Length: 623
Image 1 (cartoon, rainbow, N blue to C red):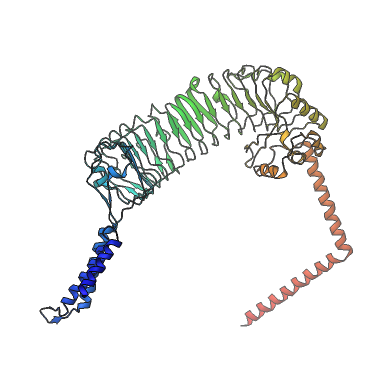
Image 2 (image 1 turned 90 degrees about the vertical axis):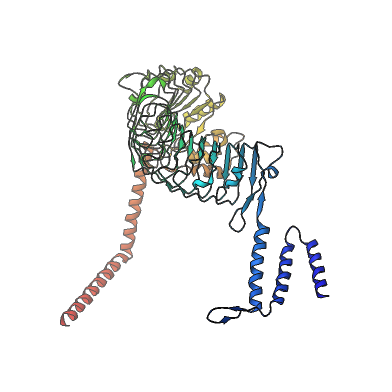
């Protein structure tokens, strides 16, 4: 009866549990029966007998069986042909997979002969699942993104596999060992970015003679051994940005003659030899922004990005199409083939003349704002700027004082001219008559008292924006000018100069006078002593609140680069008022006899302290 009840209970449990879970109950019952039949189990040794109780044996056997059952039930078997979308026989994406020692990822023996690309995302797979690669013999692309991959070994990849693209981004790889990819003879693209790599073996990329694209960005690599990239003879693109690389020399890329894209930005180079990249003749893009590079020598480059560093000199013996070298310490720029240059961004440097850009007849965009220019005359062209194809010219925040009538004579294609925040005292509108295509014109932040704006507008029919604020206009003159420009539908942008370092331009807020309230205008501009009367310029749609102005003011981090006469007089008056108030305070203290009492009290305290110190010294001497 007892056995019958037990069997019936097991049968009911089988129907209740699915898959293999009922094996747990069946194993427990068998264990119990076995223990009852071995109540007198004994184990004898040579020295004596040791008794193992039946209960202890049963507990041990039960735990062993339970572990084996759990391991069997938790193992997940992945079938590529069933797990992938039937409509996507060439591409497959799998997510939320897990593979651990206790819960391994098993792969069914089901080959996917047509699978070309396999993507594993957002999973926990600490090792490369080689069994998956074995079941996809024609796989060309294998991607493991955000899969907690921790290590790589030479045994992770099948020998002779035709894999061409291997992407292991956003994982937890800490090092790249020796010859780890040697079996991937056809590999052309390798991406190891956004990991935790701090060490790369000098022979890590051995055997990858077909590799064209290598990505190691956003890691913690400190050292590049001299022969690390020697076998990558076909390499065209390399990304080493956002690491902690200390040294780049002439041997680093000595064998990589086919390099076209080199990204080295955001590294803390202790040593960067100026000729380290001079042998690369097919360079399309070079980025060494935010890095401690002082001198750079190249043969030729299409696009050069070197913003925000310590660069002092650039020498390009051949051609260059686009150079962005803003916020450096440049004093000169040498380009052999000047006719090849189309765009030049040199704002935020230490240029004192435009001699470096003369001869660039095809230059279309030139930004030399925030430099040390005092004149636009050059040794080659003392009268005018010989840049006939120039479309965009920014001369903002320099030290320009005067411009000659011939300065812009050859700039007929110019559409954008920025002369803001200089020291210009006078501007003759005839200076800009050759600029027939001008659309945006900025002269704010100077020391102008007058400007023939009517003739300027008549001779420039395409003008859309005209920056005029922050000059020394008289109020009535300013009011008339604003009314006239509004009638001709010309926008009046409000822009601010941020000069925390003495010669730097900050953010420009491109709004218009029509969108500012009266309080905002009075707060942001210094038109005249009656600036508070700017409410006469209100437009019908001027409903912007003061909060918008406060947000705009948050971008201002400096003051104007010069002081007007009004500013100097105001400062002198404030100092005089402060001096008068200080004298009044001293007089009040004398009348109330507060000052003598305070002086006597201080003197008395000083004498007391001196007497006490002398007594202590005498006591110490007696002792």
